[in-house]
Length: 66
Image (cartoon, rainbow, N blue to C red):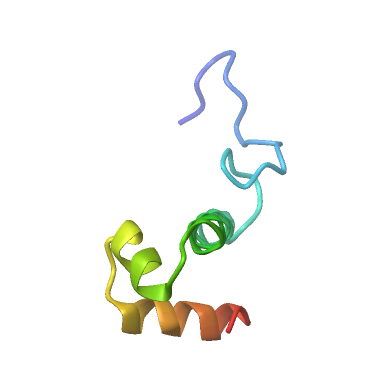
């Protein structure tokens, strides 16, 4: 249901705000990349992200970050 004075869709290309399909994946990938860059080891990055190392490994493989 439309709300008066409120846009029906977001027009921003900023992946944090929305607009493009898959933007949540874009935000997730960017965040993981930042954490990886700030971490000395994959284990440290996985701990910071709160995920298992195997999950981080699969993410890196899927995104071509390996």
